[in-house]
Each structure stands twice: as C-alpha cells, then as structure tokens.
Length: 196
Image 1 (tube, rainbow, N blue to C red):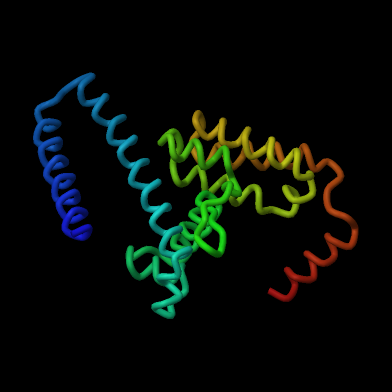
Image 2: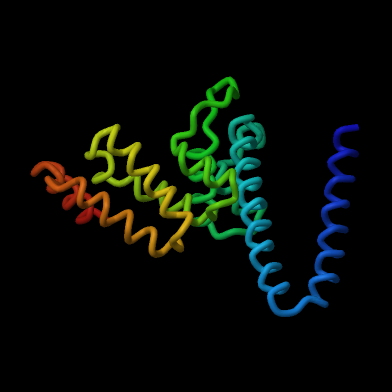
C-alpha cells in the first residue's frame, strides 16, 4: 500500500511539473524572473531531500545489506562522479546525524542543517561549510569558536555564492587560528605531502 502511495505521489509531482513547464512557457518579463527564483527554491528542496535520502540509506544499513560502500553506491545510482558522490555522502552525514539505532541526533552542522532545511542555501554551500570546518585550522580554534564559525558560515551562505563563501570561510578560520599549527604538526603534514 505504501509503495502504491509513493508511486502516486511521484506521478502527481511529475504531472504538476509538466503543467508548470507549460504555464511557464507562456510567461514573460517579471513572471519569468519569479519563475526562475521559484525553480531555484524547488532545486534546493530536491537537494535537501536527496541528502536526507542518502543519510537514511546509509543509517538504515541499506548499503551495507547490499555489500556496497555508500559513495560507490551513490555514484552508481546517480551516475555521479566518485568525488561528487563522496561529497554527497559526507554532507548527508554531517547534516542528518543519527545514532547507531537510527535515532535522530543533533546535526554536526546545526545552523547549516537549518538553512538547508529552509531551502535558503544550496547543497554546494553545505559542502563548502563541511569542508572548511574539517580542516586542521578549524579543529584548532576550539569547540565554542567552531560552533560560532559554523553559524556565521551558514548565515553568509544565505547571501554569498559557494565559491565566495569558501574564500570567506578560509579567511575567517585563518584569522581565528592566528597561532597556526604547532611545529610538529607542520612537519608531519610536510612528510605526508612528500609521501604522496
């Protein structure tokens, strides 16, 4: 019964989108501009739902039951580049955090999760924030500052495109990590680079 219900809902969405496309083809001027901004909001809803579905598939053990790594499975299912699939899985995990029993937990990136759920930011913004906060410099600024930085980046994501957000994130974290890495930390990083 549930499968029938979701199939009907998908068909209704597909039909509604076809009707919307037909109506939009007759729209001009400001109406067309309004349509573009609506489509952007719709895209954000789909991105949000995609991340949520990926998180559920991962948390509920669907990939494990199929003996598949999450990123490889996503790359295959969505015909996505492996790097993009890895970013999707990582972002989904950061935004939709659950316990081993499947209980919803506070997201690792709460302000980002809120902005994403409100369709105010793109998935690309969430990826930038996740990447910026997973750097060595971000881990050195302390938990309280880290939380404040995450909130600030989520707020900036509502205004700036992802590439500009990445520059702002880098500058903010570098400013807060004024002392930089400890002497041994830099040597360790250099030797890792030499091995690669």
